[in-house]
Length: 427
Image (cartoon, rainbow, N blue to C red; front, side):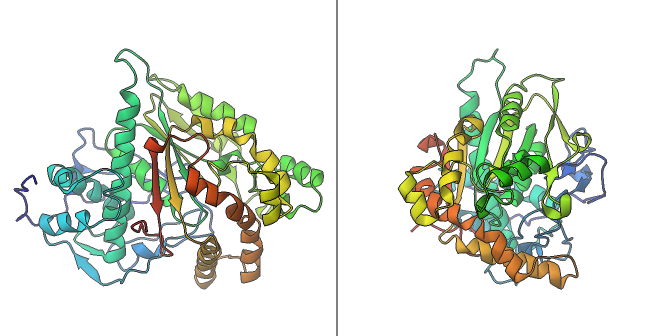
């Protein structure tokens, strides 16, 4: 194994956050940050960040009990952990190296202990960036924080970096290389949005120009939802947004086509965004003046959604789960050309029991209510999740056994998580 000549070093913070979480005029669904360090010297790092998530699901337990943690509000469910919360001091690089090598994802991403040793400086830098982003004290991380940073976010980022290198190697030097679209398929509330948020920040800090989109951005307008509901009377799965059929697929195709063509400097486009709070929570497409603008050339597009990669199944299979799924299943046939065919690398976050979605959502809403903020009642949570559970029960087994629609097994990373949303070793 390669020798680490820095094992005796004590970890030291190398960046002070000057002005965290100051609202900026430009925001998107995942946050906005502006660097003021032209020489990329982390000792002089200054950035501004504001999140733009819905009120439901605020509060992230693995961030708690940190001496410098600040509440961050996300538009989906928070992350909860079963790890103990006592401080897990990072006393030296050697301690951190051993902890990194104990992670459950290293084998999956093809990283050996030797590779970790050879790239320990990068691991330290990536960890420092994430601690800056979430305002964590990198010398006093709790076990959940330490695991989330070094067992989850950084390994996934390293895998994504490798996928970008493989993607770019297929083109000649003089070619305009389209951005790699990485799909994140994961049930609601399992932490995919926070993962994408962290990855997007790491890409920006390491010089990659990235864009983030969600399937939520492509929901039908309020008028379109009303028409869908009227066309499917009695089908509770299409009464509200969410299932296949409730998305503007033409807008999806237009957006993804445009993103894959952002290969040159000076090219700009606005990404559609959705306002879930409109019409008393029924939602509507946000005003285009509020859409996020991105500029080329893009290196990577992070595309996340709860039903990405779902494949239509034989009618008798879906009807056995829920007769209302028959229409959903027909609608799903058009989604490959609108979404999945653009995705060249996939991350699938796997759960053992779809009922975890209900528990995660319930935890989030209880937290909201306890904090004195509007939150759904237990019955409302049950009704909300019930509109998604039939699709989970029908389509997740095939997603897990065969991979997403049209995916290449060599470009697929499956991450199994526990009830605390932490990666675990596959059985």
